Image 1 (cartoon, rainbow, N blue to C red):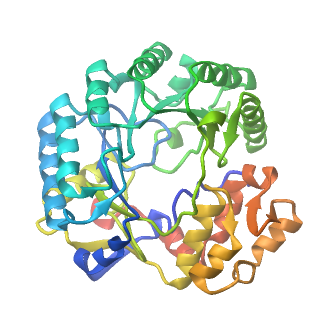
Image 2: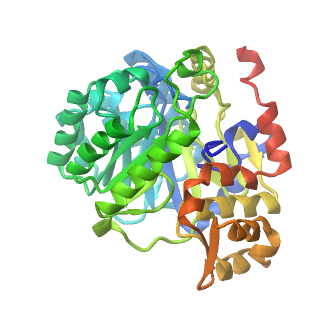
Length: 428
């Protein structure tokens, strides 16, 4: 299969399990490098998109959101990070801009009190949706120096939005884009989806052309996945697009975007040529997440609240998070051993950045990349990867098969946990 799994992190959250005896402060020494990110999860949405298998809750009242932000603030205080330096902030979800203006201001206040920032102009990233994008809320983002805003457009065709159970119209998407352009953020990202039932190459290209006409600094182009527990999983369509058709659509939109001056950084990410810069290796940075559903990475410790998809389960987990007395006790996650740490590093660099430096790998792990991962030699022989100037990278053919190659790097232990995963027993 060409489209198996999006390897945006490793290990996958379905491999996480119960942890005992883990205390947050025992791992804060990992934060002394200064290569730290703060993430705040806003797990609320207007409605649940048909394809979404992320942790989120739809249709929430203000009093619930206020109580949730109380919990996020308690968590930030208990973590005691005020003296530790952080380099960037991401506010994700869910839909962060579903918050009221006062609630949005409060999120930034929590972030400002939680940690010490590296300089005044640190990068700040926020996600939004067309229906929640208003001039007043964008003014708040500008006041707090937000540098990148990502807007989920998905398609400029109403019939395709309906297939995805998206509750905005093309007109609302266009209005949101114009508001974002007028606000003048350093980076505007637009998301598109291909493989929608009923979508044609022509309709996909029309959406891509319109997206490019707004000159966004970034475009993310996602293949449609239908995951268990989502609205789409229970909706049978005779117009389901085959994987071969999806690959053809991907190649078409890739060629179009690169022809329009966008540089491909991963299977999904395209950056406007004049916005490209030096990309450093990644895989050892730390992320501290505040809120329910966001994942933290402190060296070998990866953790989060339990994962769920179905609304009743998400609401139950959210309630448990809000009632937690001690957020410093880490109860659910994964402790990576040396082998899993190597896999994490390889996946993060091979599929999302400019490949893997053999010398950097050797310095980090005191071993040879090709000895540790002989599958890379096989991929080179198959035309999926290549070595050049001491760096292993994917070819164009390898890049388009990222969702098939990535799963090959999953260890047996992680794969067994992923296969056995079910929504938490007390939720079922």
